[in-house]
Length: 200
Image 1 (cartoon, helix red, strand yellow):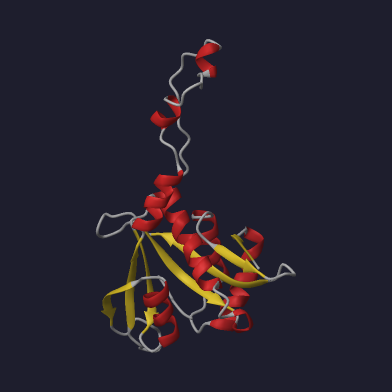
Image 2: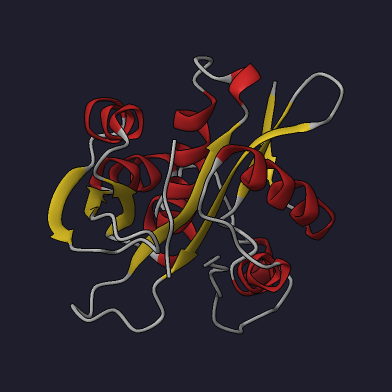
């Protein structure tokens, strides 16, 4: 099994997976909107033959009411034939990590049907989401949704730990600044890169 960032050519297969797995479905333009706006945040799971068996469709909230940068899981699905393999957790972790590393997200949110016990178990017990509120009649059929959040502090701490600071690099013994040696006096520049849910 392979988890990788989704590409434009994957979007139709992601939609097909969605249609097989979830009652909340989206037009193709909605997938392209995610893929073009936040290409770093959506991931797919492939089987040994390269066929997509799961995906997570994710984005950043563009105008958060709380003014805190955070991501949102629009849709998560894994085909029934490939469940109980940990793919949903891996997909969610990859998307969450990308939100932190690319956009400095503080938390990630999602919605889930109150009746979807399997998804609730995954989100609360495995992925450490917590319920922030209940949104009455959120779904088209009138069912309520749990609005849930996952704080991304652990991903942020790991990202900081794994990335050496500019000062640490400068102070490393025996390392010389090649650009200054060659007469380049321009300021250094640091390159910073930025089952079941249904979302807006």
